[in-house]
Structure formats: structure tokens, C-alpha cells
Image 1 (cartoon, rainbow, N blue to C red):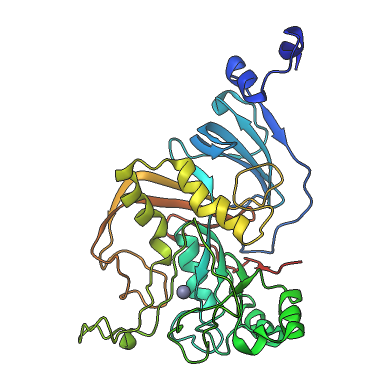
Image 2 (cartoon, protein in one colour):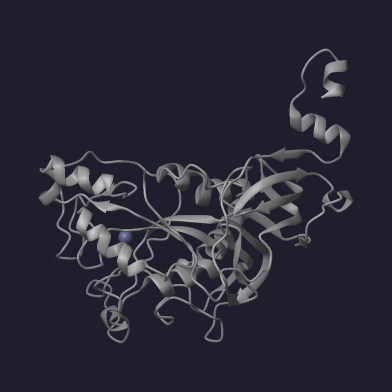
Length: 364
Ligand SMILES: [Zn+2]
């Protein structure tokens, strides 16, 4: 830049931007068209969204984000209202614009246990909760995802039902752990990684492995473990925790729940984006997800951290079973205004886009 050259050295780009208090445009090439009709509540495939509070490039502040052909095309940092943006601009005022959440631990239970959860209901709940990518666990569906064939059953069951993007973990079980070619064909078929249990999984069709099968690991991010069941297995009347099915049902509310508790400990929006988007994307090997950056898929949540709501009977809940969440009756902070998946506005003002245009994600 001219100013930097005049001083005889290159200043950091952001410092220059701050000094000028003007537009700084980060651009990326793109190539990808949007899905079909009914995929988005917005009638554009090229537009800007803007607010005073955009979480991008390691900072939080005013910016405008250009969405084009499903991708983030450019980011203009600074006083966006003074920019001359030629396309439609959706101005979200002081709401937070953040990368969509990536939940790497969810059980969608199809095929085989659609009465517990499902691709349609689970991904609608995700969209309503600002989650733009789910990675489905290999167990609780039947059969478990432990081979190329069973992954194919998953993909068939998911067809035309995904309101957000969904990837799949494969299961490491004794049957394939000792059979390298079975494991390789499962990985080649596109699972994002492998999950195994070192203790009983709670479900007979997913046996545990032991230390001869796998080394233990460490995770430092957040995920929901959304794993509901049919309500009768929860033994609501009996109230016996030891006998009730242990999975929790929370997908739609992970952002307000995390924020409501985390803000008491002073967590920042950048931290939230790291725990819920950036690191999960790394774990699942999702290269163009997990941040608002040029060239990335336009997966975005817009929300109001200070907006409170009471999760009572009248609140819309899109999980398969609305009455078994652990957070019913709670007062929470953080209301989701809009969710974009691949540039499509899939959820806004308590409405979903008509068509299910999320994509299955397969490792290449
Ligand atoms: Zn789980």
C-alpha cells in the first residue's frame, strides 16, 4: 500500500486499515452455484450482510461480508455504512455475525431409529440453532456406520432431508479394527474419521473396543452429543436416571446455553467461534469451513447475545421430540436471527426455507 511504502516498510494490513478507518477489501476467487428453488428465504445469490459486530479475521467489529455463489467472496472491514456496496445489503445493526456452528457430535439415528431423531428434524433444529454443519455419529442408527455399505445406507436415508451440511464419522469396532481392508474402504467411502468406545456404548449393535484397538485421545472444543431417544425410554414418570436412556436432546439450544453460562466467566465471541466453529472444523478436516474468510463456504449465524427468552411450552422446538430437552423451563440469553448455509438463508424469524438444500460432506 502507498502509505506503507512511504514509511519504508510494510505495515500490518489491519493496522493500515485502522489508521485509514476505511474500507479494506479481502477478496477470493469463487466457483460454485447455489442450489435450486426454495433453498433460501432470500431471493439473491449475490449480496452483502453487515453489522457492527462481525467475528472475522481474529477481531470483532463493524464489517460487511459479501456472499456470492454460496461462498464468502469478500470482507470489507470498517464503517460499512459508508461503503458503496452495489448489491443488496442486509444490515443486521448491532447483531453478531459469526461463523456457523459445527457440531461434531450428533446422533441423527437414521436409518433404523427414525423414531428417536431423523435427518429432517435434526437438521431443522440445527438450522434454528445457528448450527450449519453436523457430523453424525456412527451409532444409534441401525445398522451402525462401520462399513462402506452402511455409509451408503446413511447417504440414502439423508437424501433431500438435509437443511444444513452433514458429514459422517465411521465406527471403529472389533469387526473392522482387525480388518485393514474393511477399514480402508470405509475411509475411502468418505467418513471424516473414526469413533470407537473404550467402555460399553449403551447400545448392543455398537460393541466397545479396547486399548489394543485404539489409543485414547483428547478433545478441546464443544459439541452437543445430541442423542435423543423415543420419550418412553427416558422414563419421565419413573425418574430413574440409572435406568433411563442417557442421551441428551439439546441441538437447537447449544449456542444460547453455551453463551448464557459462558458469559458469566467472561468468554469472548472469538472464544465461542473457536470452540464451536474453528476447532471442530479442524477436527473434522473441513478446510473451507469454521471461519468467515474469503473463499470459505458462506455458513453464518446471526444472533443477538443480549436477547433473553424463556424456553417454555410455547417456544418453537424442531427436534423430533420437543418435550425431552434438559433445558426446558430455563431462561436463556442469545436469540438466533438468521442462519446461512452455503449462502442460502435457511432459517430466519422462526421460519425455515422450504427446500432442504444442505449437502452431505464426504472426505476426499
Ligand atoms: Zn454420543
